Length: 145
Image 1 (cartoon, helix red, strand yellow):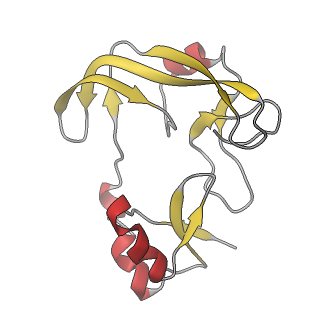
Image 2 (cartoon, helix red, strand yellow):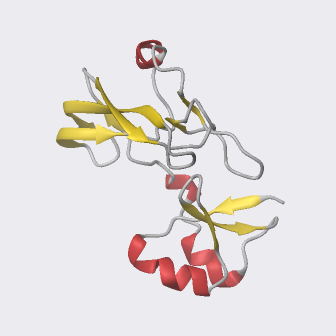
Image 3 (tube, helix red, strand yellow):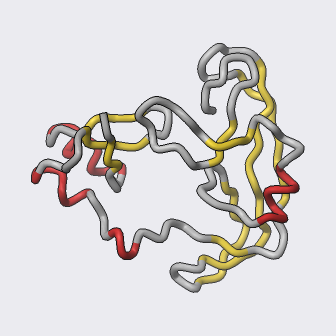
């Protein structure tokens, strides 16, 4: 079944659920199943012409690592995120400081090469989900962290 993901602020979760949206626990997003979104959910479609997400440009990104228990199997796993001391929000053209990033949708070649040392930080996949964002995965059970 085809999924259409919705853009829902946290304060509207109860409303979108009541309107018939379903929750994807892997990507942590609300969605509608089918080829079309029912009218009750249209307000959460967003404007695809301005679908720019939080786009950050930074001259330096540092990898922060931690060991945590896997959300799926509870085995110890290493997870990473990116830390930028400074950067720019390219959508709003505003300066940023001390930004932590995870679940990336895109990265340049230099960052991809740097992150090659962490093979379990990879693109998501799954039946019916919207593959393509980079996230931590458990090396034991494959669960997205």
